Image (cartoon, rainbow over all chains, first blue to last red; front, top):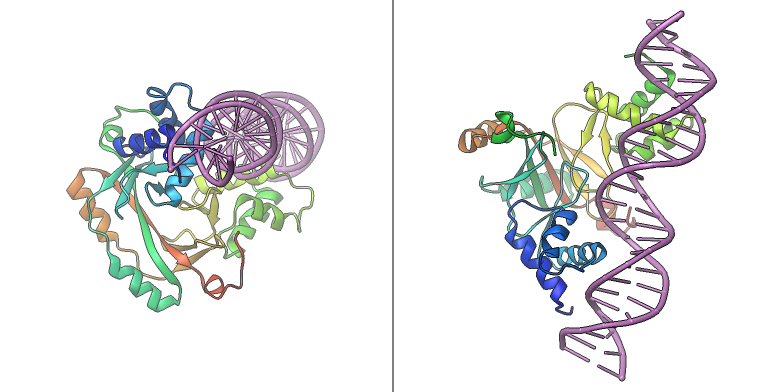
Length: 130
Length: 130
DNA sequence: TTAGGTGCAAAACCTTTGCCATCCC
DNA sequence: GGGATGGCAAAGGTTTTGCACCTAA
């Protein structure tokens, strides 16, 4: 894998943004640094970086794919109203994987847990939908 | 809400299919009964049925939206290779929601947990990708 | 030098929507 | 009858891809 200006900038941006950005949000941010970068390049590199484990795709709720610069296993919260994703500090229960694997015969690698509800801003009606 | 042939057939199909079908899979199945039904109708009704709680949207992994005829809260397993979704019988930990809500101040309504790994067929190399 | 990466634009894909005809209540 | 719903097709939004040019190693 070659190190290009574009790929480095994309990785740096995903790591810096704590909001679990979508491809489009990464694109907007990277353009501040490389104005002529193309959206296709952002998509291609997010996929490459996810494959090599340098960023983590955030599964779950929404239609848009989101990416996480923190590749440690941790849980997420997704606001049902504004769609934003937050990290949750609850410790990951790794015993659960082993227990369910033993029960089911499935080869379980990990699990993803996503809480749903309203974030603080949306509870007070400060923010609209995504 | 009016009961139409189409809506009844869609609900019946989602409940009967244990594979957590996508809109397209529901479409294919319903067409065996109502050949001239349109894909738009399937999408419209899946959304209506999800809003009224008669089917449950399955969040998580893939790009495609999947639906579950079983609206009880339960956990899922998604195969990383073939993409199929299976139900997991592990009891849902409802105390987790309360605990995290108390810690974070978020209004947590529920959580979704999805295990990842390889299903039995893909472990033995019987099946290709989705 | 050259395999891999970029930019651009078109294509592909899934989902939603507008419009008019149809059907349920 | 009248409003909700269906069929059809077009639009919409996101993601992928083909191709010619470029660039890091």
